[in-house]
Image 1 (cartoon, rainbow, N blue to C red):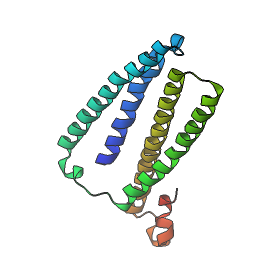
Image 2 (tube, one colour):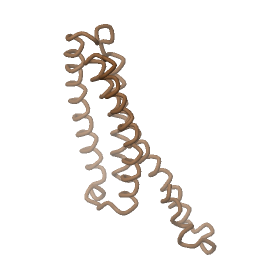
Image 3 (tube, rainbow, N blue to C red):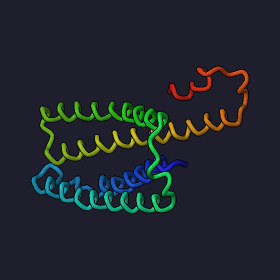
Length: 166
């Protein structure tokens, strides 16, 4: 597993843990009141601090374990995975924004809207990171197949690189 893939796994786990705590503990009973807005916004502070701390520790730990991979340049495969993941994460972000805009006119409360915005960002990030991890896993399988030389003499360049065209 590459350094970037390990970072993506750490990010996905951190997102699930942080927001897996945030949304169930959110004060849904009084979310429509001014106190609900302050409580929801106040709950974001420890979540953000926890995410920053966990990602700093995970990145430092992974960098210490594999220092050569830290400074490795992104190749076209990594850039392609990043681009495709970002592309797929864009759709839930846009849908969430449009839902937020529509709910403004429907009279949703500020705290509920804040929670919906946070949920939109979390879903978009999970889709982005999940897609990148899927592509890393899928890419490794295809590359292992090609490196092993299975059917190498019968495959042309287009067939060998077809795994990039997800």
